[in-house]
Image 1 (cartoon, rainbow, N blue to C red):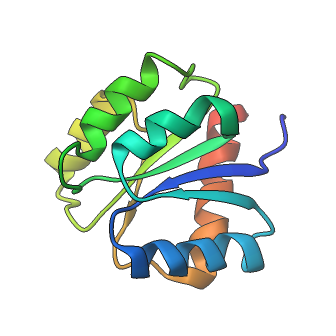
Image 2 (cartoon, helix red, strand yellow; image 1 turned 180 degrees about the vertical axis):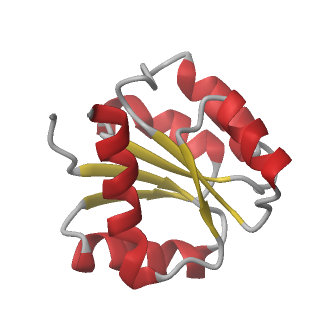
Length: 128
């Protein structure tokens, strides 16, 4: 199984972004690049070469699904798992996110102490 080290986190809410970064770097031991918009993520994704992408659904200008569609043109998301992070987790919505190419959905508000474990679990499922 390839190693999970670099996580691209796209989140427009800076307080959520900060909590997730600390949770993933300090608790999880990952290297995290935080982007505040879909466009910023598109500008950075190839240089950063993430192992995993954590993507907020609701963002201004370009939402998570639109960002994912554009990232797919730049990155092989079969090799780079993507998880959406959202409070909207009705079964139909989760199914829709999976149809778009997301490997899983992490529910907001998330538990910072569990976030790294949730991402490792998704990573393991994709790479087993």
